[in-house]
Figure (cartoon, one colour):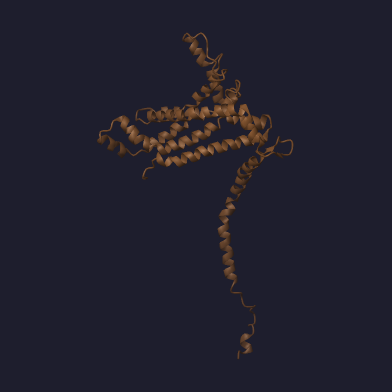
Length: 319
């Protein structure tokens, strides 16, 4: 039998402490530590949801509605997509864009590769030429459009002035002919630019041992180019191809500033068609549908490129 003196609380001491309190306090501190990184990431999550996820979902919803900003959206199903498929202006803008993509993207890759090969040699003063090759990419779009307009202007343009000095009495209608204006913008896009810089970085990463082995085997320069250099550049080619395709489908600023889509829709590209539907005619439903059509086309091309890249892209250290 237990003595009452032993079970009574001692004078000056409170009730016995709960043995579970330290464990609960430790678990709470551990939980707070685990949640701290998410607390720091919370502003990023809020920004993504507010400025990316919500606009994407909202545009998808409005692609099935009639919406002009001033009145509530009205659900019409797939009518926007059907109307766009039947509209001549949509087909013209899509064909202009596809022509631009099919010609300018491969052309830009070839020109960028040639520029990189020329700038990869070791000669005195080469850094100056590398810097000059990057200058056009630093010019603002509005400034570039003004310069191109001065060069290609049918009346006072630099090219027509030079042609007249060479004995050609009549200048070319570079920007006023619906067919020729397409090729002007295609020619302007084939400049190398950032693609050249990517290829140049790739060339400098090709192991010198591969060139030494090819030289020992008696390979000529053209054989070394196709058997060593180009295969080692395929990852950079894939990157340039993807970024060039996405940029070409989004072609908008320079034609908008130079010709406004004219003449007769000759330079109306898909990006400008979206802009005009949204901010000129306030047909937000049409603009959203156009945007999602462009998204689907771009995603199909990107998926096909990635699915086929295993057969032609070589990664160092891979099979």
